[in-house]
Length: 202
Image (tube, rainbow, N blue to C red; front, side, top):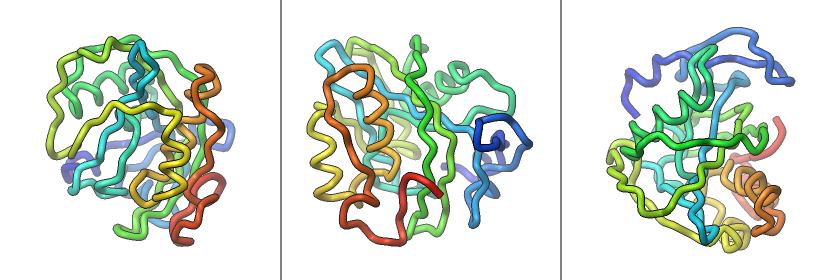
């Protein structure tokens, strides 16, 4: 993540997701953090596999963790689909895709490695794709990509929570609710994870 992206504005929201102001990415993610709007995109292929990305080492929050296909923040007042497709292009070189909103996942997580905090009103967006789309990941954003069976993720996250972003379990739960392909997951806080890293409520 470049320094310029840290200066982008995010939309601050209340507990109901209503806009109440704005702050820079950098300020919103510093303790004690400010609740703000975000999105998490999940690509799913016809067999039900989902595309994960391993976040680049230069990320200011949870670097080198496996996460969903793409994450980001809409600018204040920006449509989610517009913002999400912009980030898909920037991170993965992906062409625009149709996205459906599955629900909202509110989570709070502290990164013990960088000291940054995520407190996000996270809109989970699903993109159904063929799995053969050409992708050109930006190495400053993405270290690796992998197509995985989502039913394997709950056990993997519980076994080694520090390999995964603290929001991934909640995002996959949203996918499970509509696909019926995944059992209920728990966040890293429900496993034997570092107490400095919490997921779920604030």
